[in-house]
Image 1 (tube, rainbow, N blue to C red):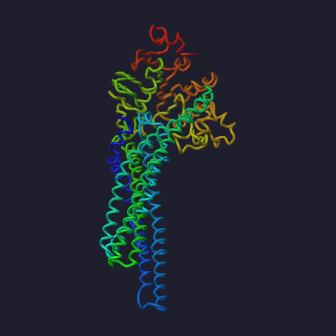
Image 2: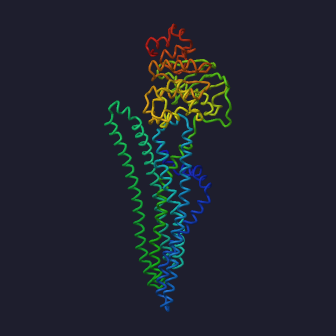
Image 3: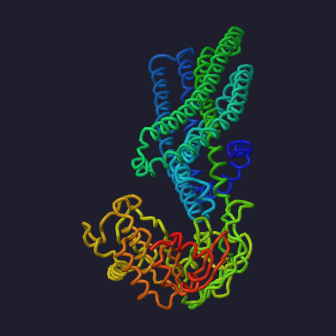
Length: 597
């Protein structure tokens, strides 16, 4: 079953659950503002009823025997004054005040949902982010899912309270005037509600399909935009434009189908209202001829029946909007209910030992079931040891580092630091113990200063400069307009690969952790820069545990120990001179230049 089908099949339950868990608490927090707005908007609906009844009272005054001259004008003046009170005070003033209150509540709900969604997604594990593109997740925050919830809440809270009060008060007046007419109007209202319920189910399905398509398209288009450099390098502009045109055409087609289907449902409701109007003409004629109602009541019946179409349409539109909002809440709820595969413990261990040994105990891990990347791995890295992980591509080297950082949890076995299972630590506390330099470091679209101090927000400019100097990054930073205040383009586009990597090294040095993980940290550096970085490692990481994932002999030679990884296992373990002289995978890597100079 696809994700779309799964969501469609469980929309009502998931939407209701998401509303209870994520929207209702915000409403409760703002209950007085919400109740005040509902009361004001209800008064607005009653004002609309009075506005429609004034025609009856006016005609009755004109037809009243014995009322003429000053008495007639006095009655008309009172009616006109009452009409202005009903329209300007009860309707317009209450409506505006209710609108202001409920709009503020709406924005609080949207803010709370956005914040909760971002916070939850930000805390979720890499496994989740590997399955969902950034474009798709962005569409949840600022695309149609939240827009649908906003639209439903805004319309329902503003239009429905007044509509319900207006509808009930008009039906009561109809019943007071003539019970036959009241029954006709009541039957029309009941059948309208039936049409609404039928339309709601259809709109839920259409909205779920559209939002699923929109999420897929957003992810694909975001990928095309992020890959602009590769597009140019491989002269893919025409193909990418065709791909974008296909994606845009699909979302346009889905949007067309959604809006046309919604319009058809509207037309059904409107056509039914016209039929009811024609029936009411016959019923009112019959009751007037029989002497059961006056001409003023007939006039009020028709103006009120026309007025009833507004609350019925408002309620119908609320049902229609709920179709989209329910699909949105169901989709948002699926993400918010997604548990992390690396959850923090309820009572985390506080404080890490200052000299913590790293131990892998019979660790296995797979990204997909029955496809193990790491197999029954056992190893021990004493404090202060410099270790290199080498091996062919796909051997599991980076995965081992990710398990150490608890970006993933083992499917079997345990990774321990200082004798404590990593699952006993809060993830943030654990990762602060590691200075990480990835192969392709992410550079934020902000200043150089903010990029360097991501792991130590309180660092002074002097400390930042010192870390940059140690990483051989200060020279190019000082040459940039603004120095530490220089803005870096999206993804580090204004920097070279070597400059991005040196900034990442400066980050790690600034954090001053007890352990370092350098994943191909010098792969983008020239020979001179690499030598300087090696010198930094030699001088500044003495006594620290350092794990290198490397393909360069210059990095490997200076390590205390080399672990040769193949098929998720350590197949060789020893010093460089020992391994290079011994037949085996390491010797093959050196001779085959997989470990290059």
